[in-house]
Image: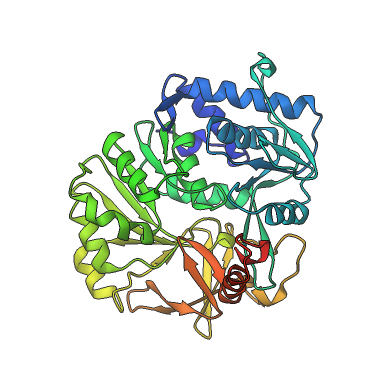
Length: 421
């Protein structure tokens, strides 16, 4: 296990990965499809992409990665982090117009791992000939760590830049608060697209601690592939969106899940009745419900589930979202949850969006748009949305954008407009 004293909170995620690679070179780092890659192999591939950036003399803050869910995709974003940049995952399932919009909003001039798209900026690829023995020095260009784009109320993608303080504060609580323990023997399910910030949790949790990230194929039926991964890989940590659990439940009694130590949920409301059925198949696991918009860095509250207390705390079958992480504080303004602290952004990219923030004598709070109530034991419970957003597999989607998309399909336009994701 990597202790708190060994982790420099000033390091980027990529540099923290290098510490694991140096300590556990022969350990499994990634499992993808039928291939297994050691830390040594992954580090060499990261070096390849790092050298591409170095040789191009790239000094840009934000760098795009065209995500094709292969070794190069993951190595490229790690290389950006080692290099000191802020990686921006570009989802190949998005239409070209949305990808162009994201590149424009983020000011991206360089995109790595491009296959068949034209982003209107410098596109860099790599091959084996770019690998050399030059070491990768810690070069911090800007404080940004990564950028995610959410569905925005203004009609276009809204950029959220998470810096090193935000993400290191998240992992400091998850890995070093003493609430959970992770080490080089953990095998963590990675079932998210990189354009969804929960992927940062399931990818870097093992890569920072010397464990293995087991990646689920994205181009197949998701819940079937998750079931396969759970049955074949001795998974110890499962991180899921609750809606996926509904598809998994009919199959879990056929799986041996005794290796699972922790089961984390986030991204949508978790039902107590569903969680009870899931818990029956995980005799050795602690189940934790987490909550947090992208703007608060992956997750910012937690609630340890158990069948007795949770049955009392649940309202309308909804499991509470619990208490805030260390370093995060909240207030409730007319039932709306507002948050501030070391994990919470204070502004969006290129936009003031003052209506999304609340300035008080306690500081500047982010308005989540989520309505909550506080239980007698202090835990928070989700009550609904203040605006017209819904959650779909963890993604926030505006209903007016969904209506526009449906209208476009009726008219014969069979693609997602960037305003309608």
